[in-house]
Amino acid sequence: MALPAFAIYSFLYLYPSVSNLWNSTKRWDGVTPPEFIGARNFTYLATNDDLFLKVLGNNFRFALVVVVLQTSFSLLFATFLLKNTKTTIFLRVVYFFPTILSSVSVGLIWLFLYNPNYGLINAAAKKVGLMDDPGVNWLGDGKYALYAIAITQVWFHTGQMVVIYVAGLQQIPAELYEAAEVDGASRWQQFKSITWPMALPTTAVVVAYTTIQSFRAFDLVYAMTQGGPNNASDVLVTLIYNTAFASYKFGYASAQSVLLVVMVVLITWLQRRTLRVNYGDK
Amino acid sequence: MLYKSTKNFLLTAFAFIVLIPCSIVVLGTFKTDAEIYSTPLALPKTWTLSNFRTLFDSGGLITPFKNSVIVSMSSVFITLLLASMAAYAIARSVTISGKVLFFLFTLGLAIPGQVNIIPIYVLFVKLHLNNSLIGLVLVNIALTLPISIFILSAFFKDLSREMFEAASIDGAGHWRIFRSVALPLCRPAMGATGIFLFVICWNDLLYPLMLISELSKKTLPLILIDYRGEYFSSFSMLFTAIFVASIPMVIMYLFFQRSFIAGITAGAVKG
Figure 1 (tube, rainbow over the protein chains, first blue to last red):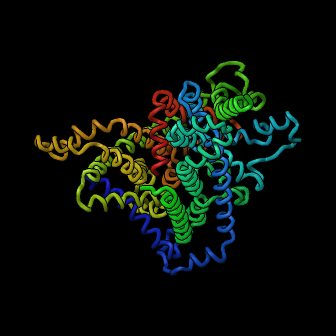
Figure 2 (cartoon, rainbow over the protein chains, first blue to last red):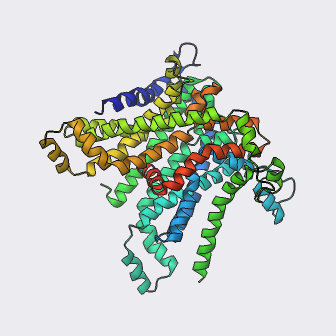
Figure 3 (cartoon, rainbow over the protein chains, first blue to last red):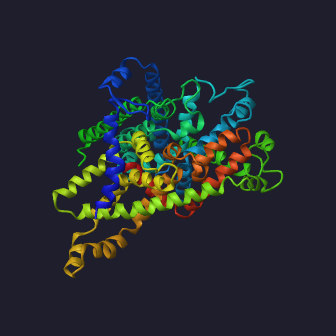
């Protein structure tokens, strides 16, 4: 009974993943027959490719901003929304809402918000006197573009992480908080000595998921800046896409994909290990 | 007191941060560009559907909408069918082959689907599956099978063995047990997984972008990307298109909030 699923899966998932490895040893423009060049794609990537290094750096900065902001916001809101009342459930539903939209829609909405001339963000900043004309060109300025997209990503997925955190925090026995209350512990002390340590397994899941999502990012970047200006907001998948389908370097793009797989597997492995070391996860 | 007011302030502020951009889109569908730029949050001066009319008269949105519906529905249906069969077989298997299968499928969770764009592209061009909705459905199935099998097999494993054994003593074969015992029991899990898959398929950009170039085969996210160039300075058109592209999801979300949140969250945690 597993046969049909396995047939499609091996033909369109396993086989492509393996052939990626093989393609990464080729010089190949996608049209003429590929030529075997051994590990030269990889040596070039590691030693000679400034663009790749830049994009790798971009992706790490993107991941860092998203992970830090999204995790802290969602933990904060989850502690506020822990109890199941009408209001908290309503707020969770509201916060979760952006998650169901497509990255392209979200990207286009924020294109408007970030618009230097009539976007809501600059308009508000000018009104309260935080910004002078002509205003910041968030997505057109290499200094800001990557972070502007990261903020959009945080807006997009914080609600989803809130829900995950709420599920995790609700596992914490209420007696712990009651005992702390009796002992006169402040809110902050309760958070520091109960919520935070007890929520660590959930935090590990949230951080790992968000990190991996950040390294798989494509849609939002493509919709908002297509990696520009001047590759300032390029991330790994947009780079791989362009290497293959704009520059027609199929072999080289495959080598970049292999590195991406290695990174993602490493992150997953690190997460599993941390969980097992600290909590004896099954 | 301070804690309570800070908390309420932050909660309300974030609710506004989420809702304001969404309201700008909804209100914008009734407005002219000039109104959107000058007063994005005000109510429209006149409630008119002329943006919708312009967009639909140009004929550009109906075909991609249909394509998105066809691709998402068929992908979800076939994936759920194949994944539940595989998950059932894995969960009930007592031999090593079940474990090996499960391991091979979970490999797909570790390898991000995005890295397969090049081999899939080359393969699909060879098979003439580019510029075809069937091609998109096949990609969607392959990409979402691992996570679906992962979620569903965990569910099947929790069902009690005795029930299956009782059915098989009564003379039911594997197919019969699957259809009459296992499937009805896992309807909620299938629903949540189905919604999770639907959101992925409906919103996907990368694979359609790479595989589809013919206008008549484009899905909604692709058309939105086209509109971004075409209507670059006309957010009334963009907002209307975003509204149309999102409305099926929004309606489903309003009706099935619980399954949505459960499905998407299970997919995230387990993936």
